[in-house]
Length: 129
Ligand SMILES: [Zn+2]
Image: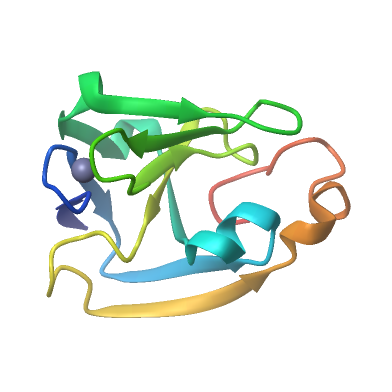
């Protein structure tokens, strides 16, 4: 397991997330991920630690309101958020770890435009989904 550190553009939001050496990330085509270019690395909450910036986060919600899109209120970058598929976990934008933190990753397309078809139970079953 490797600890990746990263954060938003201005540096107020800093986090660390512990992952296997080789990671699988999700490139989702939903309305918000496609516009922001989010590449999601989803992890259990226990493997994520917000180091700084909690008081500067703004929460944006839409549709079902389950996902909490957490934006740095100063620079606007969403470096991580609480996803609808894993409301007890965290999705980190794999574009936000510090340079060199991620060495190998596989990008897996996810059809978030048809989210309900992907997750008929209303959420993912596990972190490998
Ligand atoms: Zn920022």
